[in-house]
Image (cartoon, rainbow, N blue to C red; front, side, top):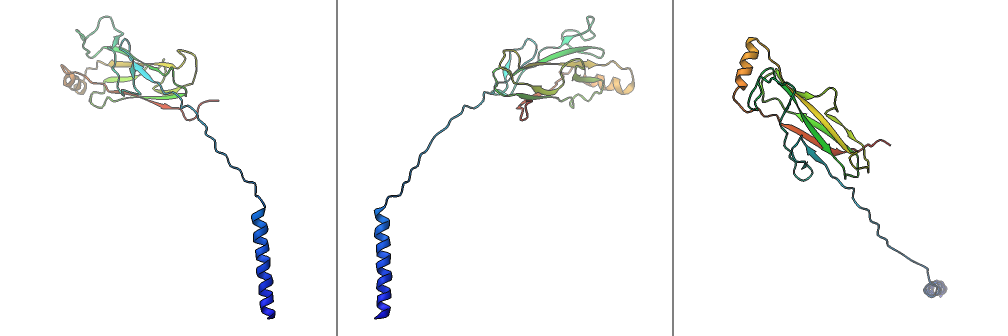
Length: 188
């Protein structure tokens, strides 16, 4: 009987604790919230000379303008180029309206030319082919104009003459790619 009394006392104690626990309230509260933020605008267009600006974010293409010739007495006639001619093409990158700094890189693919005397390079006195356009809310402040020099040097030797003749009468394609990216490390 002594063992039953201990069991009875323990059972009564558990019953007392259970009844006491259920009669007391526990304060508990919870809340949820929703935050929102707008994504920064990404607006980049590319324009070459008098050509219409192309929204490269949507279209991924643009058209190069005609070459502005530096020589008045050109060698190539009727909108053609020949050894001895040189000119420029401008590319304007316009990021006005973007709400982030913009990095840009211009690549020129001349591999199809197969003529070392025909070059397309960045103008050494102008903006480089890679760089950053700092964020600005001021209209016109997020623009860069890059000038490309197009030169067909007239060299009279056997290899150059053969390469020049290989290009004669054919359209010359100069693929130019402009890549714009969000600058992940803008200047403070």
